[in-house]
Every structure is written in structure tokens, then in C-alpha cells.
Length: 590
Image (tube, rainbow, N blue to C red):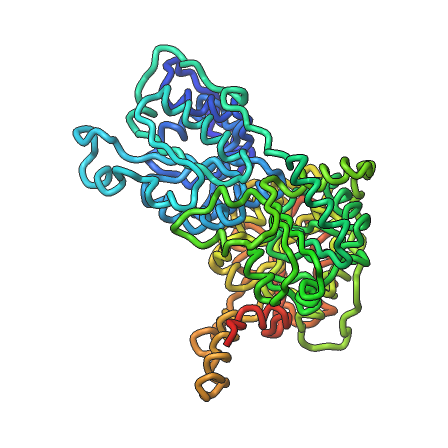
């Protein structure tokens, strides 16, 4: 028998001659029937049967396996995929230990409201079938209890028919708005039992995804009346679709009412940031111009905005609020990711873009054409003579290096200066990770880059050094499967977020702020990110510490990515954040 090449990114298995069917073959077939393209995993014995079926029964196609070096990376890759496609990728996590490894990434996906089909397995439920030691410590009575507060639905079926049924049910529930991950845990014994015939398998139509409720005529009339009477309405555009048609519809609605528009960078690009009605710059927290727009508004319409109550309350605005969201369906008592209750005069329980479309139709405004993608144009110049990279010059150098490229910013760091970059299309920027779980950036970038492969876009992730260090081995998966992407590490050599907090505490206690770096600085030795990239099969560049050199390196790296390579640039930046970010992180009302 000829052994396949282990460096072959296609990972094509040799043909299998076995004719016996196994329970796990039915599970693998179900994934294919559900249209799952990829399954991200880190191997484990609890699902060895399913692993075998994916390889030897399905031939590692539809779905194709993506080997990851950590379970958290597997979930993050599926998260990044969903941010582009809006569709669930499958993830397989080994027993209770793999589930615990992946739990932070699952929480991120939950908070970001993305679909994901997570599969797992426990050891034999029947105690007499367990191997000594290992099966006992990797078997749990209620394994999903580990993550139940932050998945939408879970099941631990005990038979093969129930297992394939649960997979289809979980898939449908995950895709149903509001979207979120679901989890199904298999018994090892179900996977490894021989079967005489393939059972009846579910398909897309077994559990169809229901349509989202549309605004009622009375609610639509009420909203139109409020907008008609308002002289200074403000729209808060939050979690919305990646559709270019929906983007144009939002612009048409804002222009019809002359409404000022507020966006942020926690969610993806949803409105042109250089439009006269857009109030900016967008940030993780409201920038001062945005806060002023809310204070001056006589009507605020929140379109699935993240933390409506906190954002409006912080500005002390007294304007009436309309909340357009179905996110309340995911509120529970464990986490406060649902944020505070919204004191809205009108709450329309629908997806925001459906409400935009309904308003345009009711107003008789024709649906506009989809917004076309626009290559990167540099907004501002950097200091060519500078010997250090400020965050302002970083953004400008990035723009200069990518000028003329049709690029997608898959990730931005906490210190990003949004005033130096404009978004013109829903794929210009994908947003943050939902749960602010540091370490998610590299894996999410890999998944997003995979999803962007057929779009003609250049995938670019700007990731902080702390985020990169925690998730750096996720990049191996991109190199392994030849997923072209550019990662720029925004390296301030510190967990700088907490330096800001230490400075605030020191000032409050009349203690030296000069000590804020202790226990925060990632230096002595500095991390060699370029070497870490090279060690995983990527092209590593840097460290780079001048804006001009950074611009040149980015331009060169973009060409290499277009040639199919994975490239990482280590950019040494000054430790600083945009003012709105620094203020928002430490402004607790004191």
C-alpha cells in the first residue's frame, strides 16, 4: 500500500476496502447531508470512530477535516468562518477535557451570536465497557453542563437514530435567529457499534429553519410616526448582515430620514464611515462625537446594538428609544452578556435588516443596488521620518501598504485608531470576538480567511501581541492547508489594557504611576513573532519599528499573500490606545 504524503494539504486518504458499516458512518453521512463543508478538530479517542468515518467512509471530503493544535483554535476557526458566511462550521471536541479547553472560544461565539455545530463525545456510558483509568476520567454524566449557560441547545443521545436526529435538530436551532452555538455529545459505544444498514438520515428539510418574524403593521406604523415627528433622529447600527444589498438599504433609510448614524468596532462594518450622516470615529466604546449625537437626539433607534442600555445611559440621553432586536430570546441567568434591560418606548422583535427593508417597502422607496466593493484608499499620511510607530501612524502605514488592494480587515486590536480608516462595504471589516476572550484572534482570522478564499479579497488580521501569543499555534492550520492570509501583530510588548487600569488605580491611591508596567510588560526577552511564524511554515517579517518600513513590508506581504502564502509581520508600536478606548475601559463613573 502506498502511504499518502503527510505534507499534502489535501490530506487525501488511500481508498478503503471495508464493507462493514458502523454507527459513526451514519454520523459522518449526516454532516454531509446537512451541507457542512469543514469540520475543525483536535483529535481525541472519544470520537475515534467518527474520525475514522470522516476519513475512510467519506474520503475526507464534504466535510473536510481541519486539524488544529488546540480545541480553542478549532472553535475560533469556526467562529471566523461564520462571521463571513453566516453559516455553521462543525467542530468536534474530545470528551470533557477538550470541551473545557474550547469553552472560552464557545463563550466568544455565544456572545457574538454566530451559528456553530459543536459535536463531542463522552466515554462509554455503560460503566462495564470503560477502559481502566482513562475512560473514567474522560466520562461525564452530563457533559454539556460545562457549557450549557452559553450554548443555545444541547443533547446527549443514547442511540444511533437519536444521534443523527439530534445533529439535524442542533443544526437547525443554531441557524435560527438569534443564532448561537449548539452542542451534541455522542456515546463512544454508539459510534463503534457495527450496523447492518444505513438508518434513515435527516436532511436540510427535516428541521427547516423558520423565518424570522417580521414587524407587525401596527408596530411599523408606530415607528414611522415616531420617525416622522423626530427632528434629530439617531440610528445605532449594531449586529447586522454581511449583505451588500442590506448595506445599501441602511444608507437609503438613513438618508430618507436624515438620521445620524452611530456604529462601533465590536461588530462588523455596517455603514459607510465617511458618509456625511455617520458620526465617528467608531470605537469599542462610544467616542465623544457619538455620545454627543445621542445626547442631542430626540429619537434613538437601536438596530440590535450591543448594550443599548449601557451606551445610552452613559450619555445621559433622555430621548425616547426604539429597540429593534430579538436578542432577548437568548437572555439567561448565568451571564450578563445580554446586558441591561432597555427602557424602550417601542420594541420590535425582528432582525434589524428585515425592519429596514419593511420600512423602505412601506415608504415606497425602491430597494437600492448592492454597494460595490472599493479598494483601500489611505485616509492620512504617516510621518515618514519617524523612528517609532504610533497607533495613528500604524493605521496610516497599513493603509498606505494596502492602497489599491481589495482587503478585508478580519480583526482589529483594542488600541485601533478608527479615525484613520473608513469602511465602504460589509466585508471591509468583520468585527471583534463577542466575549473579549483574549487569544481568539489568530484562530478567528484563519476561519475568516478560509471563508474569504473565493471572494477575491485580501484577508488581513491586525492582532495585538497578547492576543497573538495566546492563540499563535492556530496559525499552523493556515500554513498546513495553504490558506493565504496576512497577520500584522500590533506589538506594544505589554498587556497594555491592564497598564491603563493600573495607572488609574495608582492615581486614585496617590501611588507612583511609573510602576504600572510591572507584571504587564512582555519584554526581557521580547517575543520573536516572526520566528514563531516561520517555525509554523509561514513567512515571518520583522520586527519592524518605523512607519515607512511597515508600509513597505505590508506592500510586499500583500503580493506574497496574493501568491498563496501565509505571512506574519511583527510591528513594534508605541504603547497607547485611542482616547475613546482608554476612557471607556476605565470610566466607571467614579
